[in-house]
Length: 560
Image (cartoon, rainbow, N blue to C red; front, side, top):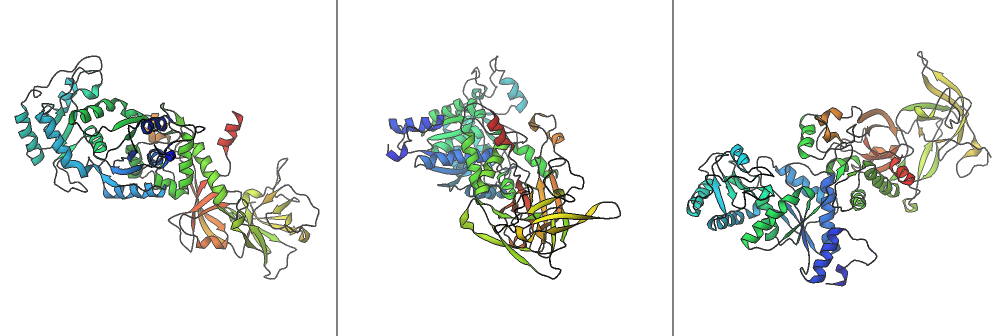
């Protein structure tokens, strides 16, 4: 084994890496080949992202290769749209498949191997109904009973299987079953299905096939064809492993091996494609890429970065036991990444007008410098216009403040970030008694970076020049579900959060933000991290809140 294939003795390995290192050290394999095998029946979600990072990451770490192989064996649920989105998601996460392959590439070979099993007396065509087969399989504590078709001769089974392939029988009329062990403790070995009849158009093979392989028949053999050395699956496939090995042994083909790890379970989230599809089809979300969805496309639209998701997958790790991960960890990884890269900008979501009464009444504009990102000096500085009329957040003023309130109030003073100290001298109200405008004075000697006023104020708030601010729509997202485990409910949709989206169409932003590109990332000072949405336009840009600035998860970690 090459030196670059081994890990440092100080590096902690997960159990799959330990297996790989031993396989390389012993000479069982000279290199490794992994694969990511999604079914193209929906969009990928954060759980798939963990599997992508694991399979492609192992290949990268050990100088191996990783294929993307679509498990396209169910034509009634698969679409080209999903095929395209999956490859896009894999590439967006930062990985390039060694080969893009399909189970349908191997339909002819799988058919020929099924014929091989039939000839060897290890498979038969069964005309029993699914209900009858279910009863004949027995229970985990009682053996199954043989179908009356189990002893049909290989010659007759070959003819029947040929007729299945030719389309002579209607859907569901019969199936091809493996002949294994009806008394096996593992129910998967009790004569499992290999093929079922489906007169359905396939997105790649068209109408060529009338029979389609079951997952257990296709998966291990596809791995073997591609000479996959380490076939990594989630824990629910542990009972399938015996069948995986049985097929490979009986066919005498390349001995791929299956290894299982714990899937990603995230609180306040559902991961079932079926449930996610319900949310889309029934209009609870705007689509697969709705920023509230746990899909990779939804996370991308919300403003998550590939780096943050890869870091999340790394921190979650690879385990043998199921556990539930706090969604706060995912948000923490995003904050950590965006804090380093996101440009700082001012935005006011709910504007309250401020008039600086001792500032010149002319159209005088003063340009003040502020940092684009204090975490990255290379991003430089930008100039902000300051004028007599400004906007601040409504939440940054309180007429009757409680003790230790450090924002603006009547007679109170506050610093405008990167600008001046101001003092509220009057508040103007409408006929309903609501404050609609503040009259303030500013301290000319208090300019940020040149302050000679010797005044000390505790509060710092953001602002915008009224004449230069541009309108924007801001979408504030919260968790889609109110319960930690919505999937445990009889109807998971009952736990949907009615306040998961708030649309603010009164927002104002810096003028530069009217020309941003879709996917651009920003920190709106004091408000959170945001990205430019696909609905954005130059007249009124649209921004999604990716994550708030508050980091409850990090605080919880410190307490422990």
